[in-house]
View 1 (cartoon, rainbow, N blue to C red):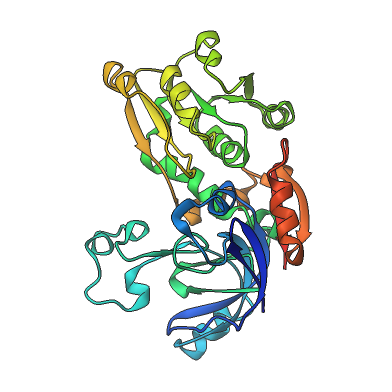
View 2: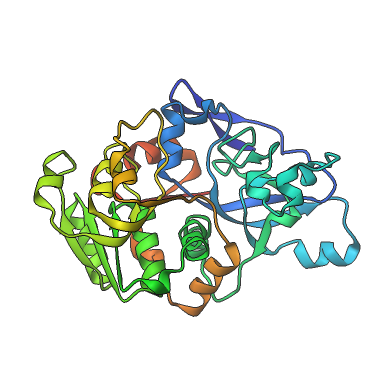
Length: 334
């Protein structure tokens, strides 16, 4: 199969055998894969990952091992998306770790993470995941929608971590792919959304979805100019500079949700957290069932965020294009 691997900060095409399946695992033929900011950070050294990146995908089950004939009939040919954290129980490790016993498989002490940590990902014709990680995609949901399930689930995680119904408004710092999804998800539960971003075309997408927008410069001058304060702020800039502004616009006793991941340190003062008694919530992966339900109901439709779809063979070109200013979601078609 064709796959792409990280090689000195670039994607290199390789021809490799199909992944070997463990009992209870499925071979998934990738139909579409999404390029995420985390994939770009991996090329810059994030997690020191050297394999095949890509963790946003929709595909169809091509093979399955160690299941009943009935389960084979159920899964073979089924369109699926997949949770990216593979826990120790899926590898057959015994005893399972404390996090898995507590039901926190996304924090499994021995987990691998699709396309991010010790597990080859979706920038390939095929990938392997445990059946327990797979979610069937309803017929009503298109491939172009389903490829967003993983980041959309990450946005839905905030709904599980924070009682958003306590808030009448909230601010999202960032206007990129994840920020746009977060805003759309929280918009289903909070009356007013204000997005702060640097890019006119991206802010226009948010306005078309019914949000208020504010232009920022992305430097220290923003803190001097911005007077608004919010009880709930989500930092999703994908940049180390976003944290300071997020602290600035969070009001005393407010809640600040951190979503950005990037390679390298973030220089920030912590005194605003202490003085304003801010509650800081780290937020990562989330519930796939809620994300799929939002797509199925039509409450969230992310297709307006797609800028370009290229063939898998064009992955190096695609990831360079994805880093251009103003570009939103770039997809790879296998």
